[in-house]
Amino acid sequence: MLSVATGMRLDETRMESIERAVASRMAALDVDTGAEYAEMLADPEVLRAEVEAVIPDVMSLDTAFFRSREHFELLKQRVIPEILQRLGAGRSIRIWDAGCSTGEETYSTAILLDMYFRRFADDAYIMGTDISSGAIETATRGTYGESSIEGLDAREMAYFTGTGGSYELKQRMKERVKFSRHNLIDDLPTWRSAGIACMDVVVCRDVLLYFQPEVAQRVIIQFYESMNPGAYLILGQAEAMLTVHSPFEHCVYEDTVYCRKQLLGHGRVIPFFTAH
Image 1 (cartoon, rainbow, N blue to C red):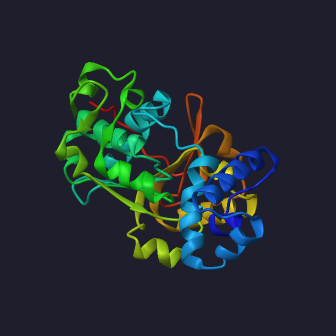
Image 2: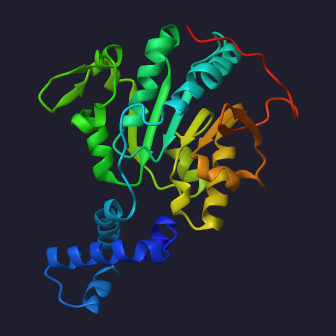
């Protein structure tokens, strides 16, 4: 049921964590047997609630602001400058963080835009989605502990208020990001009704590794259909092989492999400018 509801690849490496999560849920619900629990899950609403409760124990939600600095260097030096140069004054850049967890990475992108591309930042459309409603609630609040802000410099910390273990993003930054619950295995019309269309950058790092291979391939194609020509898809390093047989072109920036949807024709190259 969990696999069908999420597309998750459930192998032996995850069974122990699933068993612990199910045992915890059975205790919380005062359910004595697995058969009784399974009978409860026949109700779609109960199933959805239980999937939500189990996911944090099965999928890693650990993240932090500016996690993996090389990713943000790729955005700063290559991806965002190229897109902004092409868009000009015509329209705003559209960025989607798919599988945003508790929002640190999505907000980091908003901070990066404000720091280095300020004249484009106010109009940018930045969206974060996750299958976990609890993660989305945390992201929307925009308040974090010490572990989330560890390693930030003074310039980056200026976007927060508070001390003593609780740090809240300034309101103007929270207003720049839209968060919503979204299941990546939903069909494409559902994506579009959620406002997921015509994206210039899609970030989905270390999420598809959890999926069954055929589900991951379908999600990649739906990413492609939801992106503008010339848009970029950025996955985790271990996920690059998933796009080998996709329509995307492959690009390399230092040690990072990422993908681009063709602009006008195969191999079309746009010159880059440096972020300031």
